[in-house]
Length: 469
Image 1 (tube, helix red, strand yellow):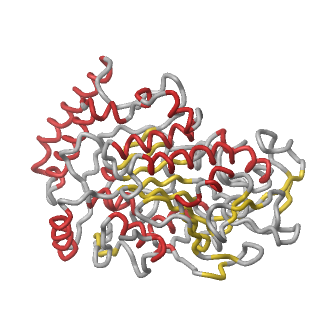
Image 2: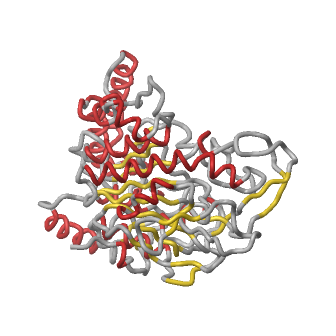
Image 3: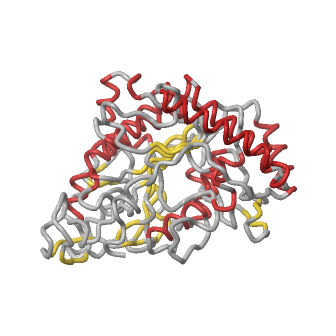
């Protein structure tokens, strides 16, 4: 919906900072017995193998596929933007001229051009893609858990000194739903490029943090006295594990080191770009090297333009000025991460996914701007924009053992509809689960109503985008 996304509450980052130690009494979901037994068998089989990781770079608001990975030079002027396609190393894959670094290294990633769903607004689009459910209502948080929260719950290990799921200015509109808030990401907010940037709740570097730790210990002692009354489903025993990990997090040197960008040399930081997006990508690489397996990071804020996101309705941005403004930063940050993962031998372990909730309308709209700012004309001046378009979304995949140098699927000459290799949200989720080593078929969780809900319903892994032996 035009102008519906604000840079603060909707697309500007994680919102209100949360303490890592969270109480979710009564909100733990039950994994059905068949699923639990099968997971135990799978865990035994994979105990000696390296577990896989995912980094999700989210483009909140929805990036234009026509100005990124699916340019349409033969479309009429009502659809075609001002930027020309440029060839890449990959036969049949052209990208926008705004992405020269992507063009030179296309052998290290694959582009899916044919993802389709029915979520026409930001909440719906995000939740459909990341939960798999056909969400049609506008809700700030989903009724069902997203794939990252589910994986976090299946992999939870209280002995870890660093969280397994981190949101570095993470994705809005998703969450663990009935799994409980303990499976939300550890949230890292703010501008990571600031010289004095520090991650909160890491280490005990000042007395205030020590005081907070003591308060947590006192809280735990109080909860012990209540446990006999509230512990019907083992919630307090589960909470013991969560509290233990939280306290380890507060005192662990390993955790402090993982989140400390100051340990990177200046040349590496320059390579990613001395800006918030570049440093978020660098943080993501540091975290996977430290053993974190689930990382989300959103490219939002002032680097996007006036309204702080990729929601390029004409009331928000001059879409072509906005894309030109943010493209060099995006191009540098993403390709630096791709190259770094490959150079460090992490490309088999880590699957990098770059997408937003949907594409943008191929037909250009012209509406008066709602305000002057970066990539937006003065209020009242008519400017071009593109609106929401879930009928065609382009997604970048790199690493995870996926063969690079390929393009999967295709849209028509205008970029309006998929004409080759149509892919749905369930196919997308099955592909990511397969990379993570999780067979989702038959796994169910019990929702708030006491009903078993499968984590996927149908779909097949995208064969072209699965690891090759």
